[in-house]
Each structure stands twice: as structure tokens, then as C-alpha cells.
Length: 153
Image 1 (cartoon, one colour):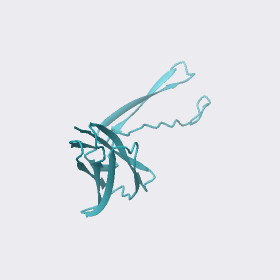
Image 2 (image 1 turned 135 degrees about the vertical axis):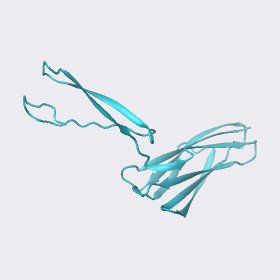
Image 3 (image 1 turned 30 degrees about the vertical axis):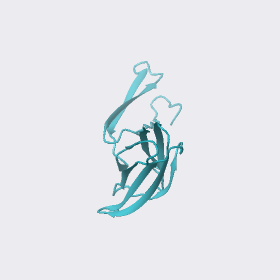
């Protein structure tokens, strides 16, 4: 970004829009630029477009429901998009108290398909809330997330 642009000169403005959580949706963000030009003291720049998903994750939130002492499991599929292939390097839970998980890789029609299976480990009644962080080898998205929620009755 150019801090000071002389009259009649050129410069650049760098704008970064965080798109996490907006996959498949239209976004529109405005940036206000203040100048010392009396004819255009304030200029509003708009960034808009459709956010493409980095990967298809189905579902984005897995639900676990079990009776006390029982184990429940749920599966989320992680499908890398052909134009942005990636491998999964590691998995970790943000809290890690009430869940465990395992990952299986299978061949899909356009590349690998990852099957994330999440299990509850909570034995007593209560709520389950955690996030599985999926670490990838792709520099544009080094981490993806699958939310985990549920209840032990």
C-alpha cells in the first residue's frame, strides 16, 4: 500500500477480505479511503463476488446423540475440489475432552475422499461441543474445521 501519493501520481491500496464461512455465498464489503482532494475527500471502494468453497465438507457440523454409557458416532466427508487438491497432514480437537476421531482415505471419481468419523467419549449426561481442526498441505488453506455438537442423555 502506498501511504502518500503525490498529486497526479499513482499508488496502490491493498484490501483483504476474510471469506471463512461464506463458501457458496455472495459477499460485498466496502473500504473507505480518505484523501486530501477537496473534490473527492472520501472515496468508497467495493469488493464483491461469489466465494468458492475450498473443499466440500458434508456435513460441516456433525451431531452426536447417545444415552449415558453408550457411544455414538457420525461421519463427515471431506472432498478436495479438483482445482485445489490437498492432502490431510494431521487432525486435532480444539478441546479434546468428549470426542475421539479417525480418518480414512478413499478413492473418489476426481481424487481422494476423506471420511472423518467422530465418536463421543463422554460417559455422563451433558452436552458435547468441540471442533476438529483438519491440517492440510495447501498453503492457501492450511486448516479446515468440522464442528462437533451433541448430547449424552
